[in-house]
Amino acid sequence: MLPPSLEAVFDQFINKLASCEWAAGVRCKMICRFGQRFLTAMCSFSYSRVVLPVSVEEYQVGQLYTVAEASKNETGGGDGVEVLKNEPYEKDGEKGQYTHKIYHLQTKVSGFIAKIAPKGSLTVHEKAWNAYPYCRTILTNEYMKDNFMIKIETWHKPDMGDQENVHGLDPDTWKDVEVVYIDIADKRQIDSKDYKEDEDPAKVRSEKTGRGPLGPDWKKELPNKSDCPHMCAYKLVTVNFKWFGLQNKVENFIQKQEKRLFTKFHRQVFCWLDKWIDLTMDDIRRMEEETQKELDEMRVKDPVKGSTAAED
Figure 1 (tube, rainbow, N blue to C red):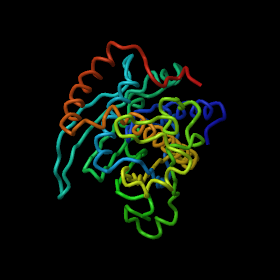
Figure 2 (spheres, rainbow, N blue to C red):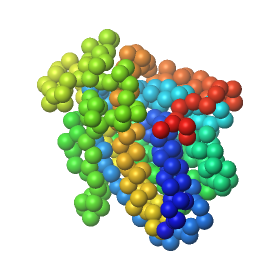
Figure 3 (cartoon, one colour):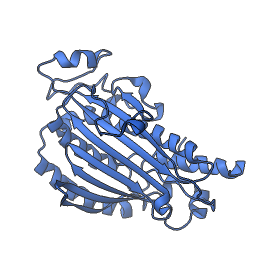
Figure 4 (cartoon, rainbow, N blue to C red):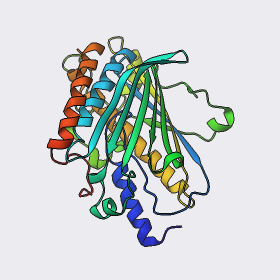
């Protein structure tokens, strides 16, 4: 185990990293090793269900739009999102869009941590294969190599979140999976630090679609509304962390933060509906190209933005 003083530093470190919010799948949670030997491996699983008053086809555009916009909010002062690749892929019968991004986190932690963190430990690589309606995202860190991995696998289905084990896990694994139900209109599920009135589905109405605000029984009423589509994002999160004495603590913490990210992100998707509902996938691809160039400039020219160690 770590000494109390060092463990306190570690707690601050993972809290700051896990609170950096780049969307949908876009996350930056990385753990820095302080010389402890890696001895055993563990995995934890969570299974989030997010019901939304949009169609599967609409969500494809809305998700990508929100990812791009949220990335801008976290980039500046040398840190933020760097897009290395964004290109079509086809492999083993699966076809979609492949992205490789780097999250630079130097200003997301305290100055003390930034000074003692080993080279390469404050960057997270995200590789994503978007074969919509199935998506797979893997987060790694070059310093920790095989000792740290977060995998998010998502199926988007035109239902109300009533399917079990959509990802086809074996029975022994499935019985240990924590199932999490996310209600985007329930204010109790959003962290107080993340709350914004203009990102509250219980208060926002889409003028273009007439959807919202969402009442307390919106999920019960949704299946009976012929003029409003619905879908569910089934998200399976696998966390693998090898650090003797801290596996459970870190894996549980990351799972909690993933739920926080999913909740905030999908509230934004709905509340920004009027900004993306008229866009096409061609519009999104052009927007992604422009955003990639903007992010490169923002990392160099803009001041530090978004979550930083000075918060809390």
